[in-house]
Each structure stands twice: as C-alpha cells, then as structure tokens.
Amino acid sequence: MIKKISFFIKEKHVELLLMVIVLSFGYFIIKNAYWIFGDDFEFLISTGIGKIEWDYHIGDLGRLFPMAHFDFNILTLIPNGNTPFAHFSLILLKFCFFVLFTYKLFLLILSEFDTKSNLFIKWIIFLSISFLIYFFNYIFLHLCFGHILFVFFPLFFIVLYKFHQTNKLIFGILANTISLYLIFSTENIFVIFFTISFVNIFFNYQNLSKSQKILYYSFFLNIIIFLSIYYFLVYQYTDTFYTRYTSLQEIFVMSTKHLKVLYIALVLLFWRAYKLIIKKETQHIFIDNMLFAGLIYALSNVVLKTPMQFNFYISVLLVLPSIIYWIIKFRYLKLIFIIMILINAYYLRNFPKELIRRQEVRKESRVQLNSMVQLINISDNSWFLKQENADLSIQAQEGYHEMILNIYYNYLNELPEDKTIQIINQLPDIITERTIIFYYTGNEENATLYNETIQKLSTLGFINIEYKYIYGLHIFVNFGNDAKNR
Image 1 (cartoon, rainbow, N blue to C red):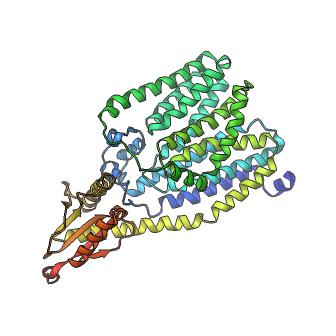
Image 2: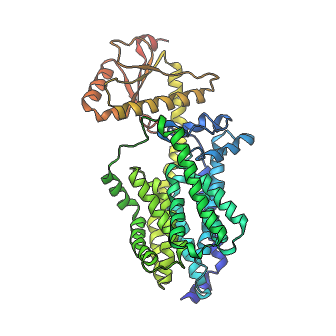
Image 3: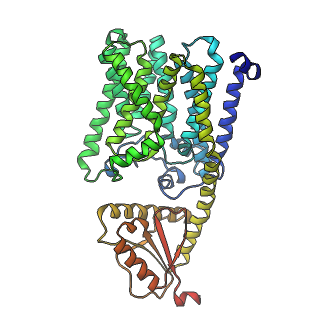
C-alpha cells in the first residue's frame, strides 16, 4: 500500500502541500484586517497608536501576564506598524513559525520509527498539523489571544529535546529563557513547567546529567519568582479576581463537545503513569511529560473555571503528539492514518464557512464602528445607562463595555484627549435633543428591570439601532423633534 501511495505522492510533496495550506490560511489571516469591538481595545491604547505595551496585564482583576502581547511591541519600530494590517501580519508570521516548529517537533518525536513507514509518518504529521490549523483557527484569526504561546511551546520542546540529546549549554539556556517568558504570559502556565520538572526530578533523577538537573531546578526557581511577584504585586492588593461565573457542569459539557482529544489523552495518562510510577519505565519520559503537562494544564483551567474552548488549546497541542506516538508505537499506523483523514474531513466541512464568517465580521465591524461614532458625533447627548440596582457581575461588565466604548470612540475620532460618554443611572422623563443611549445587553438577566427600561425607552421615542458586531451593547437613538429640523 505504501508503494502505491508513493507512486503518486513523494515525501517532498507533503511539505509542499503543507506550505500551500499555510499560505492559503495565511491569506485569510490578513485579509480585511480590522479591529473588532471587544478585547482588541487594548491595542488601541498601545501599539495601535504607536505606544509600547508593557503594564496593561498587571494587577487588573488579580491578573499577571505581562508578556502575553509583549511581542506586538516590535510594531512600534516599523513604519505604519500601528495599522490593523500590520498587527495581523505579525500574527501571520507567528502562525508560520507555529507550523514550522510543530512540524519539526513531530519529526523529532516520531524519528525512532523505521524508514519503511516514513511516507506514512510524514502524512500523519501533515494530517495532525492540518487538524491543529483547523482546530486553532479561532486563535490566529483574532488579535487578542496569546499567539506567541503556540510558537514558543513547540520551540521549547524542540530545544529541550536537543538539550537531552546533546547536553549543550546553549540549549539549556534557551530552554530556561523560553520557560521564563511563557510563565509570565499566562498565570497558570507555570503548572506545565512544574509538571515537567517534578516528573524528571522525582522519577528520572538517576538518568539526568548534572546540567539537566540544574535546568529542571531552574524551572522551579522561575516558578517561585513568578508566584512571589504575583503575591507581592497583585494578590495582596486584589479584592475582585477574574472570573466568568462558570460552573463545572458547563465546562464538562463544553469539553465533551469540543475537546474529546483530551479525554483520549486522559485514558492514556493512567496507563503511562502506571508504567512510570509502578514499572519505573523512563525511556519514554520526554513524550510522557508532554502528555502529563498538557493534562495538568487542562486541569488547572478546570480549577479556575475557564469555560472557553481556546483556554484548553495549549493542552491539545501538548497531548496530541503523545497520542499519535503511542498509536504508531502499537503498530496501528494505517489505522491512525485513516482516522486522521476522517478527522480532517470532519473539520474541513465547516472551515470555509468559518473563514467567510470571519471576513464578514471584519468588514461589518469597520462599517458599524464608524457608523456608531458618526451617530455619537451628530448627537447632542451620548449616555451610557448604568442602573445602580444591578448585581455586581452586571456592574463589572457594564464598566468594561463603557470603558472600551470610550476607547473606540476616541480612537476612531483621532481625538488628542480622551472624551468619555456620560454615565447616567436613570432615564429622564423627557427627551428634547438628539440623544444616543448605550445599554449593556447582560441586563436581560434581570427580566423585570430590563423590560421596564426597554418600555420606558420606547415611550420616550427611542429606536433600537441593530449593530450586530458591536458586542454586548444595545444602542438606542432618539433625534427629538428639535433635532429633526436641524
């Protein structure tokens, strides 16, 4: 069968086809590049206006991840680096490195298998990476995610692999540097390096060289540094910590629907943990560590009750090579080949629709944001309605949306000084001037209060302007009788 396939497709064609996929998807990363209403706001107060971002992710709601978007600061050194196109071009570059490093990592991990199966191995790697591209497309089509994590984690494990092979100091220094950067990129990333170090120190210590032991102890030191800074700089001064008020049941439903690969990895973990702890089998500790670290990181997200699928993507990236490795190890090469084809076909069926939808969001966001700003500019009054008797979670979200509304308004108007939308706590009894009112959609959770507010807005003559891509806000407009004659 291998000979038949190789007659049609040579090994080099695998890389060529992967390049075609990278270029094709990369085109959609930069096409119609524009800011989206929401978390993109942080670029509009930093690199989007030519300013370096370094402190935004420190302290707010108990968070500490200053390196999450630090790589975007390179755009401040580039002409026209403040444009949306420049920002998405940088994401495109990171996407290319993600594919390159992930491909190299798979090659290293699967290098022990015989050359007769080489063509199948290459195709399985290709199918694995194409699956990851489909699976992670949401990350690379948006600005506000930590894309650098998907570059540095494959690179880290490549460097760590090389360090164990060669014991060269340069690889150890590079691995430690990458780990320190990653630990300060997301608060719970440290559990990955804790797991890697713990497993090696407690179960593989006798097989480690002196320099390797130093490296794993240095990971522990990096973690202590991070946790100490977190405590003294953030934790003791924080009253309200970041949360989405998610239940464990919601996370379970989400994960069983979208993250089935992690449940496969969980089954594999029990077997590999048994082999390591009971049977003292350490010859596969590198690939086992990726499996353990990926699942521990997933567990940390469950503990923190982070409900979004993308919070678990790093776990998927770490466990997938282990799953592929052991299926091939058990000589189910053709089976995994067929399974990966079916999985890719499953995800590919909706992929074009997702790309089209994302292009629509970008194009319509440009139109709707500029239209909204024009409405504010021609109005006599622009108000943000915050109702004092709303619960704390609603008030927090109202504050967030009011903040980013002001940021987008000032950015699009190119105002030298910040102008803010006026906050009101109750509606007036009469409207005589052009007025636009913003009202947080989450107030719908309090049906009684929400319905009363909507009814009064209607009585006052307000019309709800539908802006589909200005997320989280109802926008009500009343030009008033006087305004109509202007």
